[in-house]
Length: 145
Image (cartoon, rainbow, N blue to C red; front, top):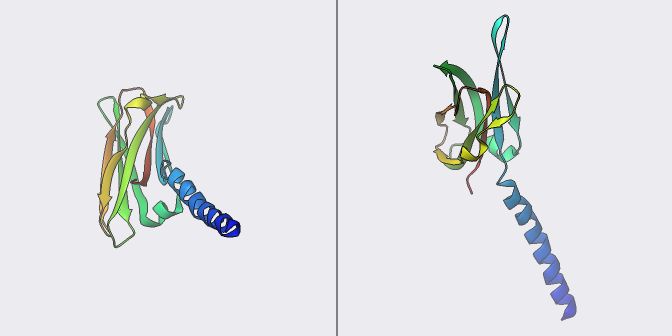
């Protein structure tokens, strides 16, 4: 009886541990896209990059374009995603805005926004900086809980 109980506890740990690890991963970004606007003597320089934090999200979504512009004195970001799956998937995204020194602006105001990507769909998300001091942004995308 004691051996059976010990074996059941062992199986419970083997099953529960990966589930706890996986559920902990759902709060982090699956993929991140980022863009920085730098002004120098030659004009405005633009750089962008994509970081993959969750291979499952990266297998299903791809950031195909990151575009920035200024409307008045506010930075506007357009990020285009394409679904690489033929099935429907639920995700969340959130923009984060940073000043010229890399300090996040108004981090409490940035909430996760749910969205659905249908099979092979292309979708563009637009974000506007909260104030004129924003010079860079990051978009975080994760699986919806």
